[in-house]
View 1 (cartoon, rainbow, N blue to C red):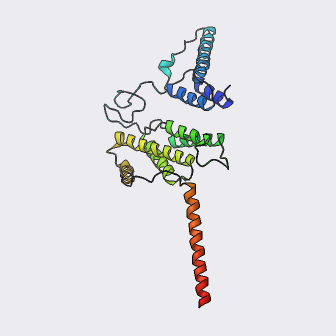
View 2 (view 1 turned 45 degrees about the vertical axis):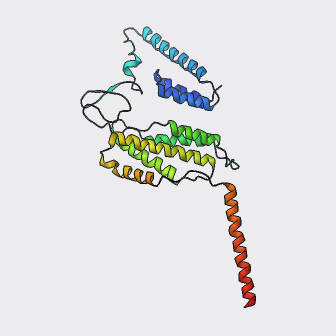
View 3 (view 1 turned 180 degrees about the vertical axis):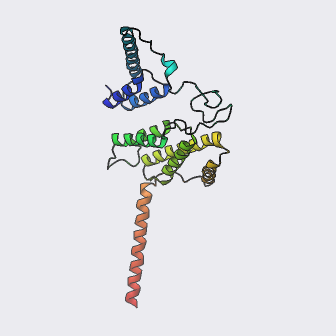
Length: 263
């Protein structure tokens, strides 16, 4: 059976009687991480949704003169439902940052702080998989695998302000975190890929926006430098380097003593 945490997530998602493909994918990933069959999870979800719909119908039938419930297809504002531009009324799909008809930028309209949600998801994984002191530095740990999965699947924001903050956040992560183990390298590569993906998206929607000039300029400079290779230093090289330094230090010390005695 799946965990109580997954049960709470299921209840939270289907509380409004609907589930989007994005939410279903999130539940599938969580189920796979716990070793639970996603197909069985779908059966459970559909059964609960049917029960909620039936319960809603029964309640409406018991109330004299009540208004029939409005179909979810007309009320849901979840991912996948078409919306209209508030300026010209053009139908736009979710994920669109600029109206193709009038050019209105959808920045600041119901924007959610993606960096905050992103950090919360990473924190949940870190709480679920605490660091182990004797972790194998040459293997990717389950903790690192879970974190890289969250990074790879987290949606890139659409609003201008949110996207700017998200780019700065992901860049700082892959440029300043450690990379001494395979687990750390895997996480850094995931952050780097998300940073590149975010900047490329910004180039599509905000290429001529002066607020992104510094972002694009820094991105091109990083590309020219080809970025540092994210590979952990082999343990034997570290040991050999330390040994060589100690050996050379000992030789210089003995030479110094010998010359001092001759003097």
